[in-house]
Length: 438
Image (tube, rainbow, N blue to C red):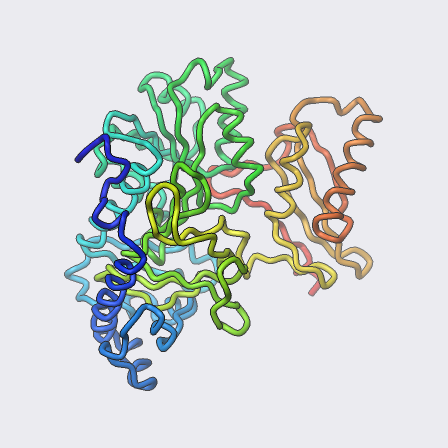
């Protein structure tokens, strides 16, 4: 391990586009062979007349069928396993709040490869074995905790499995252990900063923090910049999903110009969510991923429902793996209000431009007198609820800015700091009460 090298795995990170294509072709052929051990895929391949030798390039993936979250639910729990359960050492699953959860199996080699991906990401943003990595993420079925835990350990860092919540303890660990890097969801980091302020802790002077890995919930560039300014650190976007492995699928490099998706592990497609045809680079569409190294449960053309776009296929950092824009939202999280399509991240983007506002907000959709309405409640960064002129002016300016962005006029409510609910996991940003009336 050359700690002076910008690459942890230079043999894969510095591949040319031609070399990436060649490697993907061979690994895709092997993946299809593995999928033939799965009745679900074997039947689909037979119906479509697909053989591994029919794949001569990554572009030939368009000959293959899509896989959806519903397919995983329909084959619950182990119907998509490509190996005997005796070969598997762990599973993770989604929350499954409606219907069956999605279950993903892992062999020991799957876990090793997952750890390698996360380690590669952390190395890419400048972390090294002498850093102290505090993992302020949920453990258990949620992949964020164990994924970053094993990746940080694989890289050789001292790792603090702090888990989510308990901000006073988090701050004590940060100070006592000399924590230099943290993984957490963005909404929790804003809460952590508030508690630091309450405790008289200046993260710039009283800690060694320098790197954040943030992800697991959609967030705007404005939210990221606010976090960086609060703590005086660099915050790097992370992308992962349990159906692929968990965190590690995509990560920003120090250029912060898009998420590098590791094409030695995945084939990346961006398709029109309606027609399922590929869209040109730069155009927003649905992210579709195919695993190339998964043993226990390979997935072909998995529809993530995440909306994004390709930014480029080269980078000043020297990596030629495709760069993807931050997720714009999910096609199934889109709000349709009075015929207008709105993503919560559009609203957050506007809120974060007002320094008078804190980071916690809640969007409520309701039906009043047969009309659908949106209410945006947002906490004030400081207490001035008795200054009615200032409140009125801020409410008016915020309402106008939101209308310009989402093309509808929401009801804006400015509330005292700390009055909205706070989640230790992913933040709940939208409450849809319209269903009561449907």
